[in-house]
Length: 113
Length: 117
Image (cartoon, rainbow over all chains, first blue to last red; front, top):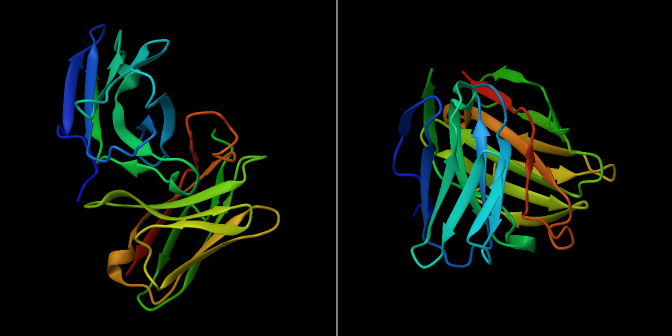
């Protein structure tokens, strides 16, 4: 049973426009939600996170929104840049002994110049 | 550079063999996590160590084992290897999740690509 779902395998956007990456989860016990970016042959790189007690967290061009009632989160990238082209993973975790990350399958973002 | 190092970068071996993957966490991080990324399964949690002790286990096969040493580096041992064990193995580290006050960020190493022939 997949607890974190990224239902769209890919997204293509024009440079300068907004990229919206979506993620759904089923486990209401998750405390933290994180987004990672991954290039081929590299490890995932942490981008931004949000605690379950918040509904928005912003860091530069990246904003994560959390809708707990819908068990849905999204990552907004604005403006999108060609260097943002990568695979983006949504992940969720609990605390302490439940701090392992549960990942979605990822979405490939392509930003067209 | 995340500060997490993993060796070797690539490993090619035969079925039935045993290999050891090594991970050095970021300076000061007490928790080490191991993940497996295969083509069809995505990133899957294997096991977590905190300050030398096993903290949590995921879907780790009995043929696999891990440990964290007093200097906090960790090793993942894979034995009786099968073709299906071919994957990318990532190590991640984080500060003490209960005192960091942060959002449980984990910092990943570059991974070890294991190919079993």
